[in-house]
Length: 87
Image 1 (spheres, rainbow, N blue to C red):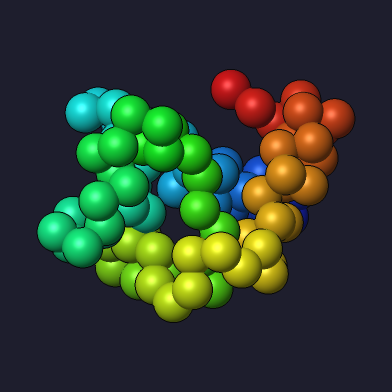
Image 2 (image 1 turned 180 degrees about the vertical axis):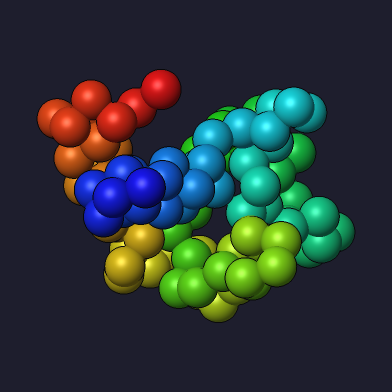
């Protein structure tokens, strides 16, 4: 892979955190019983921008209302689309 292909692959992996899994849930949502929003009809499909994520399983950690670096996902989607890297 060249550097552009590597960058596109890394972008796809980050974007994948914000796509629903086979069960229709977002990977970064914790199954913690305190996270009632994941079952609430009004909030279960809303994205939360966590401060950081668990590197092993992708679960969101830290404040869920921070836009921080995770707002970068919007830029990655636009860049991949411009590069036609979205498959």
